[in-house]
Image (tube, rainbow, N blue to C red; front, side, top):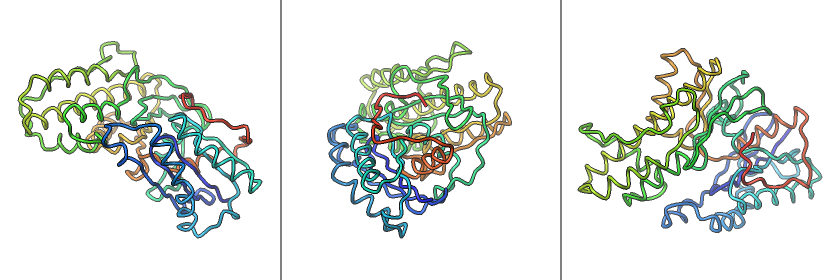
Length: 338
């Protein structure tokens, strides 16, 4: 079985060819450079980029896989959540292929795919056994959520951010200090250059209630802004702010996800999403899980970002389990339910 995966939920245009769970190609074209001057993703620019590049990305994915469109048996496409215009481009493109080739189409939840990416190897193939139930977490530019995962189609949201997502907070902190976009990599780099003296005590929201699993990152963003307005604004000061911000955010994430594992008496934790590329977050999660005997599933770094391999693999699994969609499939921009 050959599956074509299509991902256009935000600013990455991606296509992947998967054959019976083995990833043959995984092509990604990003419009991040076009959004840099604005300090964040501009939806109209993103959707226009998808429209312009989606066909060439598909051609490259087919070429890399050594396959033709006539050999594809299934189209799996991200249906949501994401930017409305961006999702519509991918869904419409997938429908056109499904109609023209008379092959089935599957709409995939973007967040479910990020959780699944924790079980993919470096090439994107699903070769790690998925044992249910487990606690799944998505930490990305647009989402910070915790799920109780009972099976491949039963993910219950048990915690989520009340305001900013983690990645969004990184971007806004970088913008406050004029460090560039995207904020995650540059803040992490600056944090690594801090000398370790006089760390700033930024707020760690929603930790007081020992049962609460929700997040809030708007307060720490505001705290960074107020501190920045009054500080000396030297390079060392920037490094200290980045380090202290990263410490506070990581502290909250680790404590919340471990709390979720303990509350549900589950020994497996799967954490996916673009922010999991952060080395310090990966290290802290690894250390805490090892200490408590929790089995941690975390994506290979090349599988953290938005990609079509995770969409294709999940679509193939759902299709084989009996799930079917049709040409009435619609984009679901705000559907955070898995």
